[in-house]
Length: 295
Image (cartoon, rainbow, N blue to C red; front, side):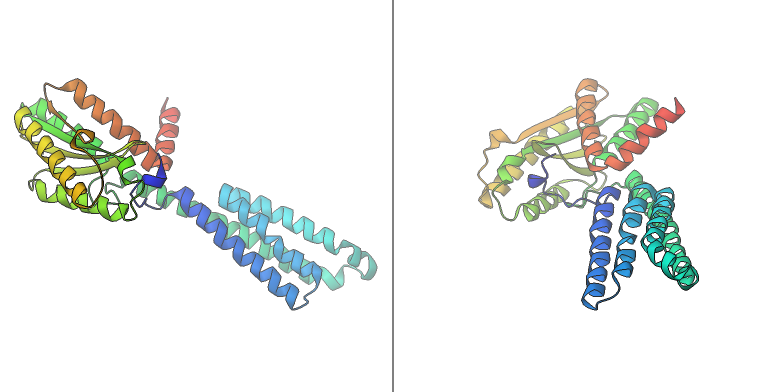
């Protein structure tokens, strides 16, 4: 997905949180070491502080095991740094310092690794149950897939019908617009005003276009087609009013009814499946891993 024209504010995924944590943590450790240098603290102790960096990186990427491994490595390196002085004056003078540093390294690795694993689990779980598109407040691709699954099951059981209408707006139209995020939110508001209480409005984005879809319970083919065409007309007029040059021919409207339009519905569901995987990469990876484990 081309995030430069994504026009959506992504929920904080674990990968993003990890990058943020790395930058913040490394900055704090480096600044601490620099302050120690300015205060002319012993070089060995400055290095001892910098040894928290590999522990930090290890537990951020590999959890508790990484933290413990990093702590063990740091403790050995610190001992080697102090070894010449130990040989000169004996171990007694440095025993307390070595023990306290080793304890600090392992505490940092264990607690940090545990906290990181909790963060990963929580954010992955959040992704698994996330149903709202953060840029627009509409439902997201995951909700669309779950909701259309439910509607298809209900249709088959109770012999009812439902339709899906969707409009694709090329994302290239927003590339040079300075307020594209605001415009997309306003488009979502336009869609909310156009639907009934029982309808569910959805937003997602592919690499080439923004997709606005609506699940329309108890709506036949003619009603769905009319709704999609009118929505495309409204969105085209709305964008032109905001000086976004786009023709109505560039805005594509579609509709599919179940039962009846099985291939069309399968196609739009496949598109939203791809969008869901792009929006929730951590959850997608977890689902694949679980499927392999079950197999």
